[in-house]
Length: 234
Length: 123
Ligand code: SF4
Ligand code: SF4
Ligand code: FES
Image (tube, each protein chain N blue to C red):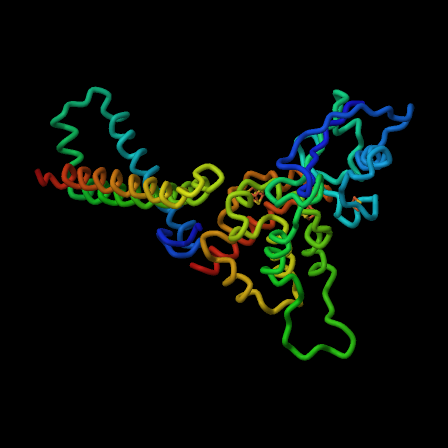
């Protein structure tokens, strides 16, 4: 199999380059992209990437695989590279630290901005704040996000305004707490988002929904935030 | 750096609503004028002027011109704050955005002023 890898070591390289490699894959098995990286790293230990759980749970190995963002550990080589050539690049729109490792600071900063935790100043009940099954259901499709950044780094609006547009992952979490029956900070949360950039730079292109490895739909959550903002504003 | 300067409605909500409301006015105006031509397959200049200069039509046309200005400004400001980046323009990104928005403002102003002069027969 042919593999084209993005390589960059700031200590020795003036600029990034693509490295072309040939790799013998074991017969009769459909490897995941992460397995290919492990084989390559055995040959060249200087190759750098993040990984941890190798089963789509930790969200650390998001990368650009043949032009589409995804998790290396859950993307089969046969799906990623049907024509036999695998092209691996780091997530776009974030500074590269080395090879496939990007600096996620900007992504986390936007996540932090939406206050991704429950806010409720009322006296807590003796045991726990209860929800009905219907209220709990409102959080489906929102709480499953693993913060892999595949969506946000494929969003053109985030590329253009990463310091102002929250991005799909952060906004999915913003809506996750707006939709939570136990959260009482809806008004402050919405006030934080009403400027021309934080939410409204979303153009509904839906790159986010098409790459999410958990099949979540951030653009739908964003549309609901917009509806809330507009109906509250009128 | 990109800032809120030039955002018409000051908040994203206001811009969002204004952009859609102005689009509705423009669409209705277009339908109205198009409709007149559809109902008058053999139009004369005199007949058009008689219809178009009625006070209700002048007010509608003024509203359409205002909507055009609002719609154009919000759209072009958004494009200006998306694409005019150091990535393409280096140190001149803010300057280039200024030229873009200045050009938009000038063209819109001329168009609206000219339009108003026609609608209210000020020449
Ligand atoms: S739908 Fe919105 S958030 Fe998602 S990729 Fe498009 S612009 Fe970005
Ligand atoms: S919404 Fe999906 S793509 Fe985006 S960070 Fe969460 S899991 Fe990753
Ligand atoms: S290694 Fe954890 S999600 Fe891929």
